[in-house]
Image (cartoon, rainbow, N blue to C red; front, side):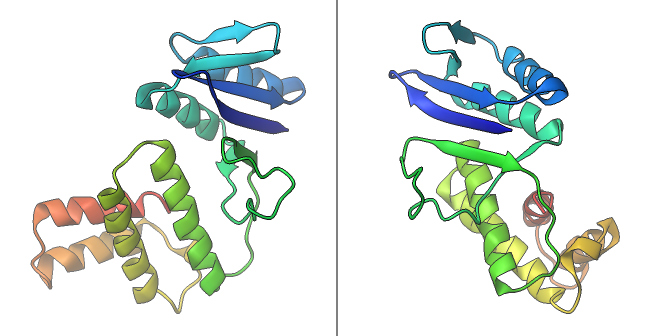
Length: 179
């Protein structure tokens, strides 16, 4: 399965994909949920408006199907696919351990998602801070085994011990929801 999203003309993105069976149907339905989409028969691809709302709808639908994630561990610059206009996604894979490179991989994925959703650079910096801090405080634990309890405890600690403002608590929680 493969999905490629590229700029198309000035105000659109092209969406090419290859999939079979149920996966094909899920991807097609995700694209059809985007308003003002169009099929380009000559090129055999779909186009969607290149605006934040359309991108959010498409990416959220693809993600909610449970099939895709942005692969930030892929060395794009050194690949044969090096074309700065494309965004490639791959089938979701599992990770076995948490190392420093895994933490960096998490932060790279966060950056890709935030960039795709057109969040500001400052939001990226703030979310990276909260996620890094949460990981540092739980460095003796496997990140996959952490539950809502640890996240709630972290946010509660911000409120009770550090007397953080409600907006800071909300921001930390929003950042941790990306994990």
